Image (tube, rainbow, N blue to C red):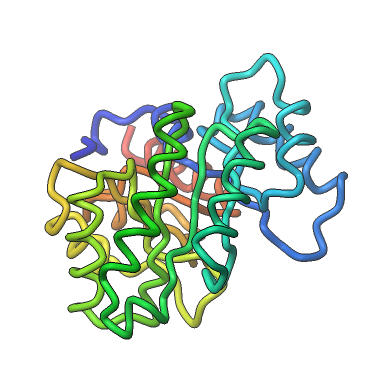
Length: 233
């Protein structure tokens, strides 16, 4: 569990996956995203797989990771397609992979499929020393389904399980973060993403067990954190 009281501004920045995943994204958007990530020392830029090469070049010489979203945002591509996209993103320079599991298969209770998909993508990432996160898209899942997916993750051991794409009907919920963390224990970390736009919300996610935050409002959240610290001095 992260100790918020001992957290520095840089510690907070190193939790952020600084995000721009819009369909209308152009090169100047990625330049701005990477400039901000470098300036504030964010952990990662979260992008779709196409601009990985560009962002890798823009972040050259920094320790900011490039993270590719795979099967995004619906997760409704085949295992083979997700594996190909994962390999290509890694080839292009991705340091981290966030893939969307097949929500429909999970809702059909086809847990063998979910496990096979997870095992294959995690295996590719392990072979390449790439950090891997599995996106659940909790807004479409029951609590029981969230637990089932988390139990598979506890067995397969991706680095993170993640609440949401940010493109569903709702984003991260504190109770879901708690449930996910309780299920995976110390075996796997939890990333909260979707609708986290201020420090108060971010703080609640961290206190619930999140160890990475996906957001396009990283700078605004950082300012809220700094304002809170200044008010307590």
